[in-house]
Length: 118
Image (cartoon, rainbow, N blue to C red):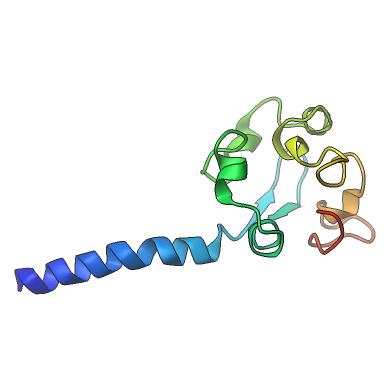
């Protein structure tokens, strides 16, 4: 029985990272400082080919929504190059102070981020 349990544990240890990597964190819906800001891991990781550590090594914690607990998690900070603004600066990707409806769901013409220079 111990051999059987050890085999199952090894298989799970090998399979779990693959399942987590395949999921890429799913969608995250920020509620602060305003409601309904959608971040799509699928769009950024799968469709744009970005790696997890591009954001999680220095810009964001691995814990979802942790950034919105920070007092400086504001549009002003994003425009100044913090958080999403580190890439959404108008050069690497569209500037965080443009295309509001691309991220803010419920905005006229808005919805989940799709296509374009993201």
